[in-house]
Amino acid sequence: MTNPPELRELERESYGESYSDGVIDIFVGISTAWLGAMWLTWPGYLPGAAALVAVSISPMMARRKRFVEARTGYVKFTEQRRRRERAVYTTAGFLFAGLMLVARPLGSLQSDDLDWAVGPDSLIAWLLALVAVAIGIIVVAKRTFAYAAVLIATGAIAAMVEAQLGWPLLVSGVVIFLTGLVMTRRFLDRHPRTETS
Amino acid sequence: MNRPDTDLVPPQIEIDRLIHEPARLIIMANLYVVDEADFVYLAQRTGLTHGNISTHMARLQASHYVSVEKMFLANRPRTVYRITEEGRLALQQYRQQVGDLLAHIDTHSPGMFD
Image 1 (cartoon, each protein chain N blue to C red):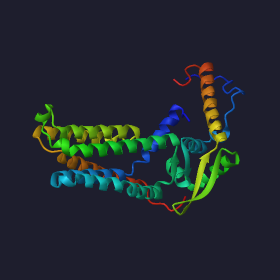
Image 2: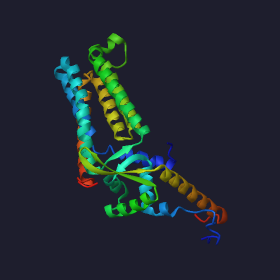
Image 3: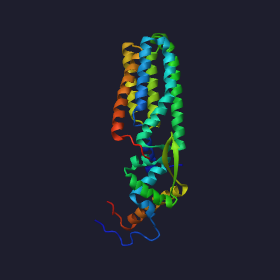
Image 4: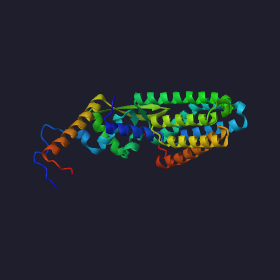
């Protein structure tokens, strides 16, 4: 089904609004900060930490759905939209997992070894920023562009001071988590819980 | 200000008055862009009261523009609405009717909306 322009905008706005609760932002913020902290303290356990994040996604999304629907009601978007959403989550998940797998071995190399202008850590931060931008475009969440900007900035700073990827991840995670908290607070103010339908 | 021609709404342009009502129009538009939605979602999106939605849904359902299903989701009763194919077509036709009307006004009374 192809919507006329004004209804396309209505659909985009409806869909974007369905992600205004901030719960996913809180989860992504905690996860990113957690991975950053693990990187800095126990880097050997990083794959396990990333796996823990991965298995937490499904129960988190189920609880989020109950939390949101109790306040905004139930909606099922079109198959086209749901297909695109699944593709985004799957692609982002694989990209993130792949980056986490190569991050440690790649990050242990120095930029001189590879004759690169910047260290691999910063490159990975910027690749994560690209993932955030792609997600933002597809799920209509402009705030992910701000998250991407934070990742880019912290990656750049890490490159300048020759710090590890752990710091950009930790800082970005905290920023995303705090943003999620503010969003959830506003969401709760706008949508008090309702029992009727 | 230009005054409209008396032949402003030609008889061949019929506006679907069921959809033309603002509350029903916004309900239909919101249902058009999703597969299905429940009462609470529509109330949130449209800003209408529950009573308003019930009244308008009854009219839309009677005209087969909307279907209603009572179901259980996550062990909670829900009243779920879907726009029917007839309703989709009616909204598309309404959009065309309004477009034709505005084009007709523009032709017979140019500058009317300036």
